[in-house]
Length: 185
Image (tube, rainbow, N blue to C red; front, side, top):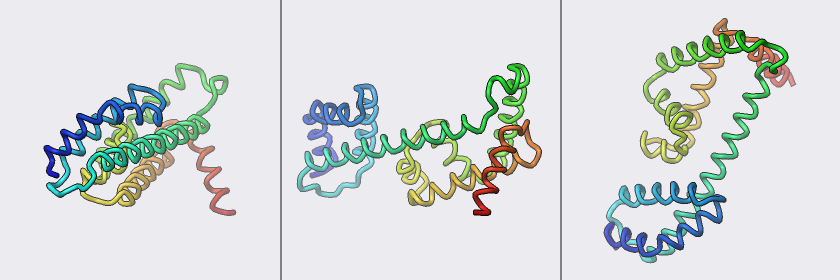
């Protein structure tokens, strides 16, 4: 079955795919976004025969829902970890906190500008556009593991730059101290 046949099956199965995704993702808006991603993926598929196109589409939908749930969990954990490293409202006055945040953001932007193009692209796609690592890997022509390594190196570069006297580092010094105790243990 060619690409056009797969699209026809997708359109015929769309209501069921939407129900599956809504059930797995928890809401209709995320399900609609996932269906849009599926449509784009179908558009990119090679002209290869697919014996059971409906089953194939439901498997793609299930995998996409799983990827999105994992990414959302990681994003939540990462954001919670970031918030834990920040000074509490009672520790730093608002004006000072705003200045520190602006200064840190400038350091982050400068660091991203100095990164190799592929690393900066992976970071922007993941953090700003919130694209799944698998989609980034496909776009960059590398493995998901390769994307993870690029992101780890990018985060490390940013953290090192901030730690080396970049923007206000009260919360960052605490994070660095905690990391040091992890390395020793």
